[in-house]
Amino acid sequence: MPDFKNYSFSNASVIFGIQELEGFGEGDDVVVIEPETDQFSDIAGAKGDTVRTQTNDNRCTITVKLLQTSDSNKILMNIHNADKELGTGILPMIIQDKELGETYVVNNAWITRIPTITRGQQPNTMDWIFRGDFLTGNID
Image 1 (cartoon, rainbow, N blue to C red):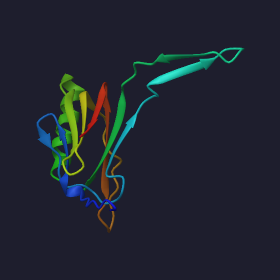
Image 2 (cartoon, rainbow, N blue to C red):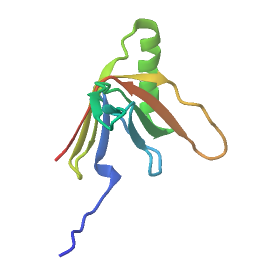
Image 3 (tube, helix red, strand yellow):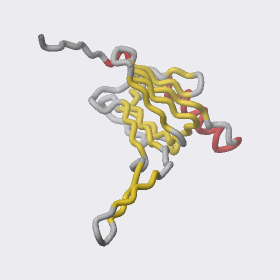
Image 4 (cartoon, rainbow, N blue to C red):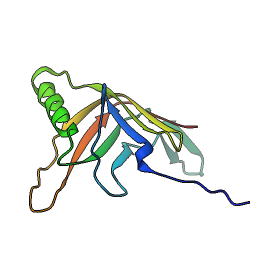
C-alpha cells in the first residue's frame, strides 16, 4: 500500500537563543540550512588509490525569511546591534519540524549581517543570515 504523508510549515520552528522566531515569509525557501563544506575530501593517487580525510568543518549558513511586519525583526536587530557593541550575540539555534521529526542544532550561531531593506507598495521579506560553528542534524 502506498505511503501518504501530510506536510505543513506551521509545524516548523526556529529558535535563536531563547527567542522563537515568528512571522515567516512565503515560499519554498523560508528556512535554508547550508553546510559550509563537504564533510569529507578525497584524493586519488597515480594508480587509483584513494585517500579520504575528514574536513571536521561543521560550519553552516542559515537563512530565515521573515515578513517585514514580523515582531522578530526588532528582536533580531536588537541582538545584532548589541553584538556589534558588546559581542553578546552568539547564541544556540534550533530549527525543528515536529511533523517530520527533523531537528537541527547549531551550538553557536550569530547574525552575519542585517537584511537588505526593501520597501515599496507591496510587503517584502527580510532575509536574516546566520552563521553557525557546529551543525548537528537528526531525523527521527
